[in-house]
Image 1 (spheres, rainbow, N blue to C red):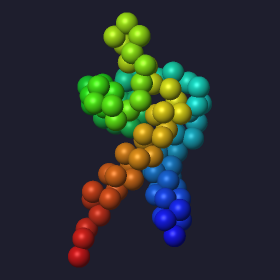
Image 2: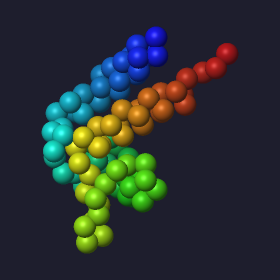
Image 3: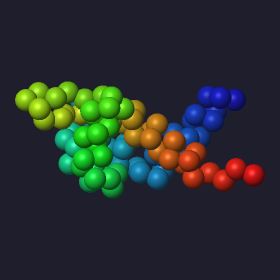
Image 4: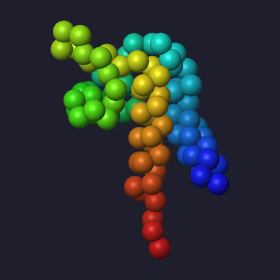
Length: 89
């Protein structure tokens, strides 16, 4: 039952933002790339990196995010966002 709920949540996130499918796991993304993909400010992406929510590399102070790490984070973020907006009766 839990796996089924997780699959439903992943399906929701991927149907809402199908561009996630197109990102190669080995791709290197910048905060600007991610902000354009999901519609948040670049500083929000940097904050996620600084706070450890989004796994990243930071050579020379520049954040670089692997495609696989972004996909994993994005699925969790969209599910949490969906849960936050769900009404409780």
